[in-house]
Picture 1: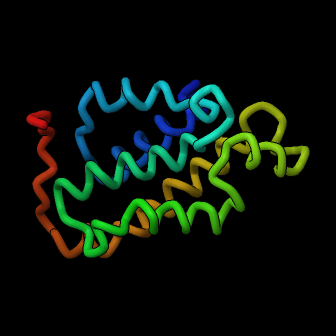
Picture 2 (picture 1 turned 120 degrees about the vertical axis):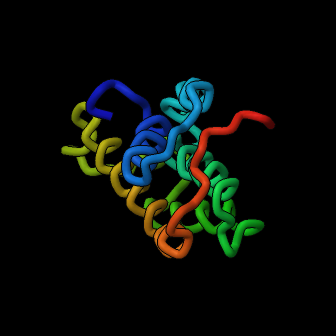
Picture 3 (picture 1 turned 90 degrees about the vertical axis):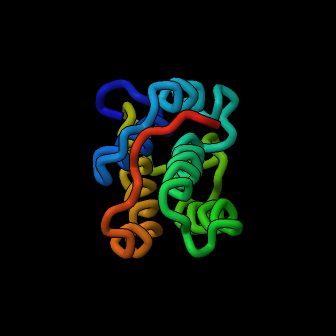
Length: 137
């Protein structure tokens, strides 16, 4: 976020850095369009980034709740931030978080932490996951 990336890109980049995952260039290109609730104020980009990263991670090492994972992430995100809508989240922030991108930086940091917490046990159980970049789909 501090280098002019949107929330979706920031969550993906944080996941990539923390887990040393080589996300494909086209994945990051897709994430670039999820800024500011896809320009409409809806669908927080950080949530989209969490789901995108989970899809990539699930391909490499299956999450025990794979089928329910998007809903699980959605519910945890909504519970943490009170909404999944970018516009609503921004409106409900304290004044100091509305200055610049401070609120989004705080939100994406926490969203990335939540994602890593969700995947922590799966990742540690798979000591040598196959994290090679594949674009065969």
